[in-house]
Length: 324
Ligand code: ASP
Image (cartoon, rainbow, N blue to C red; front, side, top):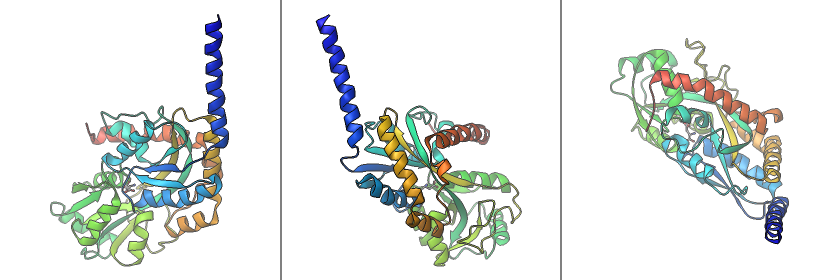
């Protein structure tokens, strides 16, 4: 009997300690894992919101790049991290395609994470090396079709947005081309600039500067409407590919088991960051917007993840794409 109540006391003390810890959180820097290479599109989104979240959290938010396997290595790292609020994940649409693409995925997106909120929907651009012999989308398309065996398409691995966009493009134009995977589109962009690869479909958060600087050729955007910061670029739909739309949604997650009080602080910090005029301006310059506050919530991210897993599963199965 005495033994039993001692045990109960110990359990109660543990809970009290966790509660106290959550009250004072955060007391040290937080790591925000980006599952792609530094300097790329997801990294840019993460660094923009991390810099703002740390203002309300009162602690540094350090972006940590864990690239490879289309974003699954970084996501796995966070799934296994201590659920104390000091490791969070910023991931994109790839979180929803991974279960269909990876047969031996070592985490479950819906079960191993706690959603914090959506961040931004980022359009993509179809771009090519600076000396690509096409000045508009029609010429680009004709050249790709005529030279498919000679051309290489860069992507950030199976499940990356650049992979999904390329897959959709291949099926819509009924043309296969060689793909070259990287740990992120930052290194892919370096090779595109150097002319080692020919073309890629990548997010505006990585391509806007290169397009405006005239370093790459750009042919179209993948959103349903034109992107205000790149007003001269037509949409894929305008260019004769009806229904071609790829927009890359991003969300923040914590590992399952993160205390509720800590989750609440992360949600509040994310919502504050998305209201920050500095974040808004930076996102606008890069062709995107922060999501409205109603979508910067755990429920909105959970619903998005669930519906996107349901949407992409059959598409990927039909395409016969997977990795072991
Ligand atoms: N998000 C990846 C990156 O940051 C690129 C991609 O998904 O295509 O490199």
